[in-house]
Amino acid sequence: MQTYEEDSTEILQRGCLQCSVATNAKRSNIEEKLHKLLESSPDLERYKTRGKALEDKNKDLKQSIEHLQFEMEELKAKLTQTSSKQEATVAELKKVETKLNEVHRRHVNLESHSRRNNKKNFRH
Image (tube, rainbow, N blue to C red; front, side, top):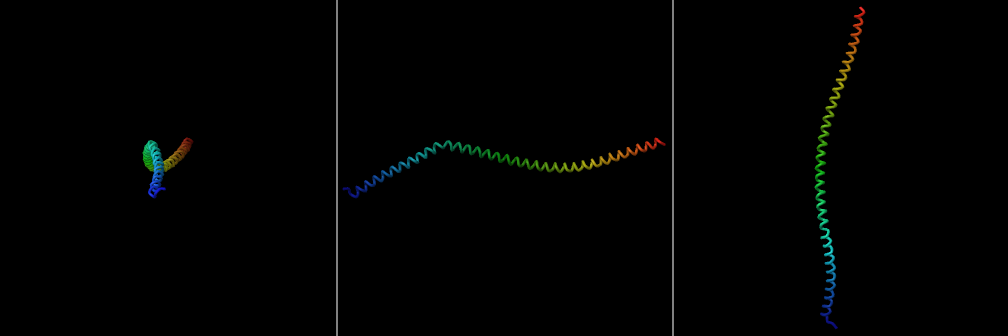
C-alpha cells in the first residue's frame, strides 16, 4: 500500500507527463504556424512592394486627373470666350450682309433708272 506522499508524487508525475504532452502539442502547433509564416514572408514582401507600386501609380493618376481637370476648366473658359466673340462676329456679319443687300438693291435700282433715262435720252 502506498502512502499519501507516494500517491501524490505519482499523480504529480502523471499530471506533468500529461502537461508535457499538451505543451509539446502546443509548441509543435506554434512551430508549424511559425514555419508557415516564415514561408509566406517572401509573399508578404512581394505584396508590400506591389501595394507600394499601386499606391504610387494611384497617386500619379490622381495628379494626372487634377491636371486634366485644370486644363478642361481653362478650355471651357476659352470656349466661352470664343463663343461670345463668335456671337458678336455673327451679329456684325448679319449687319454687313443687310447693308450689302441694301447697297445691291440700290445699285440695281440705280442701274435700272440709268437705263430708263438712257432710253429716254436716246428717243428724243
